[in-house]
Amino acid sequence: MTRNGELHSRPALDPRLYWRPAERHDLDAWSGLIARTAAVEQPVWFERQADLEQILESKNNPVAANTIIGFDPEGVARAYGRITKNRDGDKANGSGCVDPQWQGSGIGTGLLGWMEQRTKDRFAEDAGGAGTGGAGTAGDAAGARAAVPRPRLRLYAEQQHQHQAALFAASGYGIVRYYNEMHRPLNQAVPETALDPGLELVTFGPELHEPVRLAHNAAFRDHWGSEPRDQEGWGFVVNDPQTRPDLSGVVLDRSTGTVAGYQLATHDAEAALTRGFREGYTELLGVRREFRGRGIAQALLADAMRRFAAAGMDVASLDVDSENPTGALALYLKVGYVAVNRSMAWDKVLQPAAP
Picture 1 (cartoon, rainbow, N blue to C red):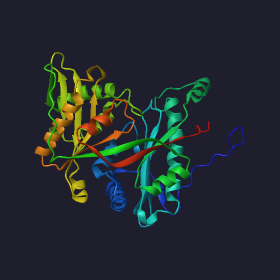
Picture 2: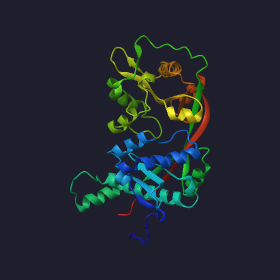
Picture 3: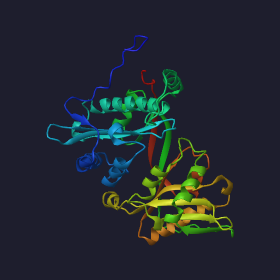
Picture 4: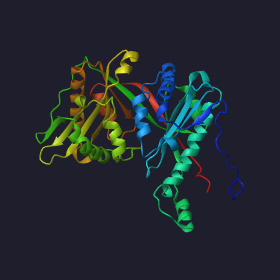
């Protein structure tokens, strides 16, 4: 009970399941749960075992505190949830799933409650310098509590997943952004583009990992919801098994070597088997502010199309914030992309954790 008499109860996770944080020996059960759920719900993308291995390696979001899996009496994983948050971020991101055979019985509601409570605790920990090893005074602790920003949890759902939308809406979440998945057939002619003589387009490689990270953080400063990528998070991007450096391009300023723009691509070979087409996906596309207006993004997209086609892809694809401030949506339409699916970001501002 708080000082003003309000009751605070931990979220009720379903007692039919045994709940604990994810561990390395759970990889097969964990990925199996996600795959079973994806086979029914057919999301555009879902976490594979390699993604879960990265989650287990994270030092910024340790699994012991930020994941939870529910197992049935036979030891089969039936539900999982996790949150991620940058230490200085203004939100946590939540994700998870419930085995289709166990949906509709309140497990998702309890799991969402766990994510919310963990988000509150995480905001309080980050504001109070948890884990720094410093010994503070009572006054320090009071000041830290006063400085805690209002916790915010963000969730994502594709438009066809109405059961998720119903749960989020009933739990007090509201849609704050729409994203369009866009495709462009590669049997169409690739747009002709030309870069300024002072610019050159090269293939992405290890020597460009850090320069492109810095360029990405600079390019996305004015993008809604974007937060700087630290080296751990960037390492998960560039070292992901689906990342294809051979399909990725970087535009450099010849005189300074500065990264002006970049296009990082991935290819999901397993998805091609279920979706019926081979897809070259532009994971990240960005241009530094001082280089905008020089046709760099269009040149990178055209280069990606040529690389995708040469690798035997059928479709070039990407996702875009429908309110992107750089005019990206108009550019994508101009070069032949069309919207094929939509997803939504849902937010809820939470009450801070009780002292």
